[in-house]
Image (cartoon, rainbow, N blue to C red):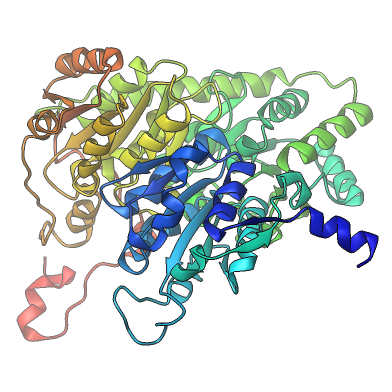
Amino acid sequence: MTKVETELKSTKVKMTPSEAIVETLLAEGIDQMYGILGSAFMDMLDLLPAAGIEFVPVRHEQSAAHMADGYTRVTGKAGVVVGQNGPGITNMVTSVAAANMAHTPMVVISPSAGTTSIGWDGFQECNQVSVFEGIVKETVPVPHPSRVADCLRTAFRIAYAERGPVLFDIPRDYFYGEIETEILQPHQYRVERKGFGDTKKLDEAVDLLIKAKNPVIISGRGAVDADAIDTVKAISEHLTAPVAVSYMHNDAFPCDHDLSVGPIGYMGSKAAMHSLKEADVVLAIGTRLSVFGTLPCYDIDYFPKEAKIIQVDINHRNIARTHPIEVGLLGDAKDVSDEIYKRISKRDPNRIQNADRLNKVSKRKNDWEKELVDSAMVEGNPMNPRRALLEISRLLPEDAIVTSDIGNTSSTSNAYLKFTKPRKHVAALTFGNCGIAYPAAIGAKLGEPDCPVVAIMGDGAWGMSLHEVSTAVEQNLPVIACVFNNRQWGAEKKNQVDFYNNRFVGADISGPNFAEVARSMGAKGFYVNSPESLIDAFKAALESDKPVVLDIQVDGTQLAPPFRRDALKMPTRYLDKYQHLDYKNW
């Protein structure tokens, strides 16, 4: 044996595959994971307390990946989930797909059927790799017990590099046995950042920005993840460029900055939209410029058709994916932003801030704020949902984390939620599934226990996640659930109002008093039906040492515009029995 071979061998230690998995998790700094216990991974589960990794049991596996998603978005550390082979893992499909669309690093430990029974359609057998391969960045099957640590390292490497979930699929019998392996530290197998990319392209971008008459910046999730916000501020101030935030990433630029114009996308800020519409150069930092997040809103087709776009993204798949660009910069949002600012400052050191542009931004923000308040003050029966959003936004502490679901009111929160710090807004984003806000809030609270955490959702979405109140009680997590209760699927009902002549099929739902349900589960519950009672209940919730559910009664007739007006058409009917449903006969 050569000296090199001897040194390599000496780094390997005898252990079980379960031990190798747990030690690799510890090397990654993992101190908690989420799921429901199962026999498939019980040998690994048995090690977690001694290793110092907390296993947080949920009531449904979909919640596990939503919790990991919320945890990662506020901490920056990849979340880890695990479940029983077959139904336990397939229960995570929706929440893993949501994390994939949200670019959230995550590792899904996926025990699969034992190697001796694969193909027999045995108990809880499922080809989980095939199920997940379209909704994760990569699937990493373990080919042999001796490879468990290596494959788990690969899963973390890809999860961080490509910003999304990775399936680590391991046959359930591979947790057992005796192997010799080594445990590496993260710096030995993955890099934290990719640098600032092509210097020639950087010079092209800087040239465009210096010459721009109306530059606008869009700051996205990548700017948050890379801790680039301070540099984005410096670039905007140097150029006097208004800064919009990408859809439902309201924490990607401080709302109190003079050049902040708020979010774009559905129910975003008109100040942002009018500013972007005038742009001749757009600097998009850490955003894929999603189709849904750039659609017209309020009848404003705001995304500029002629502007030159400079797009910064860490993933080459996102560059120019949805909008043609002038310059693409592949790299870390912080590294690229730092380099842009350095080069702008050097080439154009004496630029004076544009007072006219600052005044225009200020006026647009004031006009938009007035419109928001005026809309909220329209009377409702029993309460205008916008009024409830307005009061909650006014009462939020500066360090509060807010999670928002999908749906009529929770999506309208895009207009009302304002943040001065990053890693404070966790939204459903473009996968658009119901039931994310509350489990994501639990994950966020586990990640940042000293911050108040508030979840906003409608009663429809709440029905898909209220079982996790038991988890919050069990874990002693004082998370606040704000349930906007209008006894309907409001976003879809609005489509039936606008496109189907108020014919409601499946839109109306009924439910219990959610405050009473919360109390029966060991949480605090408040039934709220006026702005005054909401203010009192929300203040009490902020002081509570227990989970709190606010059952907020809102007017079901005060609905936001359809999510996808572009994707719906007025109904046409040809058969005689349906002619009365044809829009021409209304």
